[in-house]
Image (tube, rainbow, N blue to C red; front, side, top):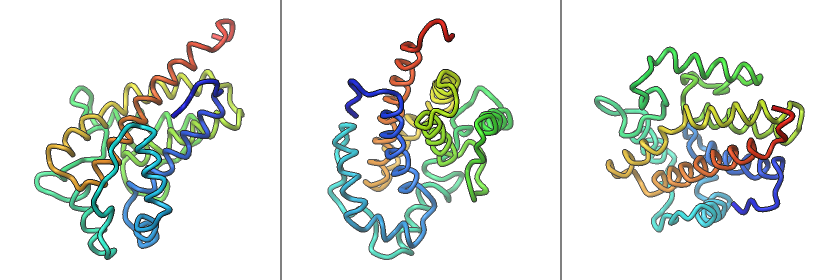
Length: 214
């Protein structure tokens, strides 16, 4: 993402597009999602994101031709397996230092603080990847709308990224070791790069805030 001469609102707007795309691609399979991922409306933006973040796009088919196969592939990657799925999408799974209830409680408190109920329409725990990305998206919406003083949003964002999303790089390594399908490997590589850039940009934005407002 070219960020020179962009303000927080412009960066937030660009990140919203990135995270919305990733949420849509990594969400639970639906027939509508499957149709989208088969077409140019998915392939084109995916190629653009790969170029932006320096990731090689998949050269094979993106998703199977039938919805049943698409759903089965997703479930086999992220939902089912013994003793666990190949890649678990929960932050608490990768955090060996803190109890799972504490991690989930921290997520819930942060979500509530900014008026977020995440993940919407899902029974997944609050530390699920989709909920985490929805929270980041919500913080960007608040930055773009300027309804809350930016310092509190940026501090919350920096803390959330550094404390609760470092697991994505571990999940990417696991995905590579376990040979996940090319599309999901690509999505995780884009996600890891986007989160790394997000953390850097958030730190820079905090450093640029006027000292008198600290």
